[in-house]
Amino acid sequence: MNILIIGNGFDLAHGLPTKYWDFLMFAKCVKEASDWGSIRNVSEFSELNPKLRNIVYDMNFFWSAYSGGEEKEQSKNNLNKFKKIVNGNIWLKYFLNQLDKEDENKGWIDFEYEISQVIQSLDLLKSETEERNKKGVNVATRNNVLKSRAESFLKEMGNEEVKDFCGTYAKEVIKHINNELNELIRALEIYLIEIIGKIDVKCQLNDIIGIGQIDKILSFNYTNTYEKYYDNNFQEDKYDYIHGRIRRSNDSPNNMVLGIDEYLNDDKKDKEVDFIQFKKYFQRIYKKTGCEYKKWVEEIKSRNEKVDKKESWLREELEGLETNLYIFGHSLDITDKDILKELIMLPRTTTTIYYYDNDAYKQYIVNLVKLIGQDRLTDWVHGSNPRIKFVRQQ
Image (tube, rainbow, N blue to C red; front, side, top):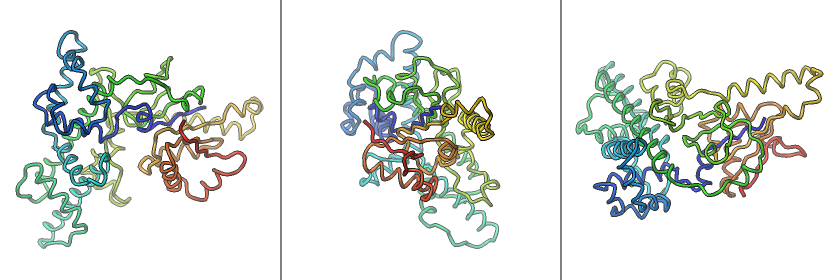
């Protein structure tokens, strides 16, 4: 079985501006513009990815969204919704403020990290407020930086004086920022459909073509780039969009996951659930993204067990039961450890990792140590038949 695992680097390799920074800068231009036609006059317009600028320059695209046909009417509604969201979304406001503070990281922002920092700070503020109210005396803060971040975030929401962050007030804030997060996700979906979807990919990647038959696709992306440019015989059960995907129609609910990893220890994570809706595992279950890859793992394990029992009809087909993982454009970050490790650790499995440059190569090695350990990594990358291979992108 050949399984292709793709992350955002897959879209970037096709020239698609799908980084959070691209989305955020486009949203900033839309927010600053009085209407769609004046986006080119916004000072930040020159900082946009050239392909985004070309979309804006092509005024026929924007005018076509406002006249004729059900599909164009839907585009019009989507674009108007996008502008409405970016004009008032608390998370976008916060991200833009963070971007202004971090000149040394120009061109880069991680939404999930930023959201996690806010949620952890609010969680800390809430627990300390409740503890103080319970004891009737001030308690020593466990993290002044996080506490300060929480208070600043609440002020940005319009609360000039920070109230005790507990009880009904805390519940109202948590509900509000969760609704705002869902609005942000909707804006991101519109960007991917109405803007990124209008960019034509001119060529296929030689590395992907060279794999040959791909049986399963595990995508950490929201986009349908592989479907659109490589798959001439689409089959639903071939794909697992682990973080959800852009909708094929507005008739279905948005199931895109934009959340954070668990930050509480084992003693607390099953008890303290005030912020559970912001966590990836909850969103995956609630939004029913599915975990199709689990079925693939079960199938692979079942076949391997039969081979281990040396069932005669399988002996001659042993080679056909090998699993080949191909990872393209995924950072192998620890946040997806459980999924990646489960696949890489499967018996009779070879993993090929495509890297962009030497810096990415070094980071892959570091991240793999975190995933499977240095001893196992050392054993698996050497020898005449290594289980892990690194290939520079063509």
